[in-house]
Image 1 (cartoon, rainbow, N blue to C red):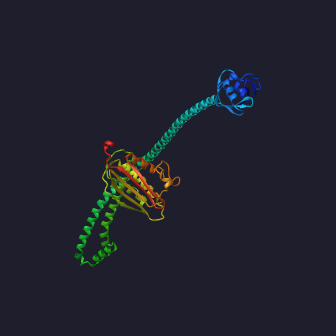
Image 2 (image 1 turned 90 degrees about the vertical axis):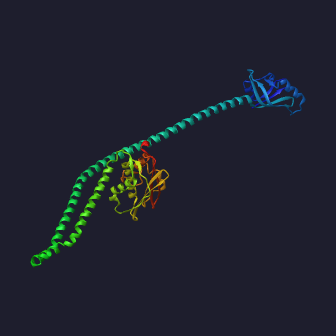
Image 3 (image 1 turned 180 degrees about the vertical axis):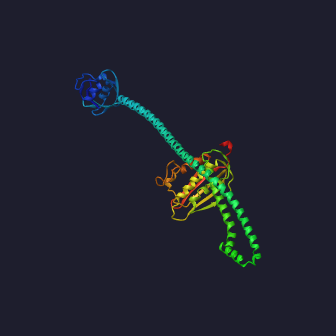
Length: 412
């Protein structure tokens, strides 16, 4: 702020340091004539107003252009008034300096805005890179899970193929021998019947007849006649079941094959149930199949997906109540669906979003490969389908597999 008392002749009577700074003079320097420093209004105009004014009257208020020692103009917010027999000047701001400061501030604001835009672009790029990294990490985890699962399945497939081959040959022998044995039993029983028909001819030889009757009683011939064919039939049925399990094992041993064909999904489910029958001995399996047309798919892969979902359902049964697994199917529009529901422990809502992540599991460490659901999701996704889950802790879980019915060989 500049303050000065000036005589009507232009002599500087008194002034503060602010005015000397404005005049670019040293502090306290004597200035004989300040009139040349006034530009608009000039000093003569201010003196003319002074002569007409009473003491205390304002001679000028507002912008006042003041020239410094170098002749540079400065626009001041000033007030000039009559103070006794001289003029008093009170200048509050250098408007030009304010304008320069404002211009500087605006320039800095522009630079800051540009830096903020650059920073925003960098942040967006960083966010995009982080998203890309997350995607790549997810793909890497999925690829790793696929490799681990493939290696495990290949080992299981080789083992299953070897076991199936080793069992298949003796099964063939046993089936053939049972067929022959059945024929032999029928022949022997026919001979026994023929001898029984001639027992009347032995009535004259009481001792021989008594021996035959004793032997017949000791061997319980009537029971053996009735039971022998049933034993042969039951054995044949058991061997047929073993042969069916071996056949299903051979199907699972081809898990890495990529042959696509039209397949009955209900048959895939039954094959899966047959292979997993040892784990279902204490579980009630309820079939509620609907109408489901044959689907063009890779059956060995879907078998594995169904097996993983079925094993997950079996493992969720906690024994607190009789275990039940429901198998359902149906069609909605151009989509077919298979549903596997259990009455096990259920899954907490907070965990549902991650159950298909590779290596994620809510079970104890070491319980399973932690790849079953992830593998099932990958197989179903590879068929153009999806898996939906609904679950309630303490009630159970339901996995519904959706598959497109319109898929053809051209679209694979």
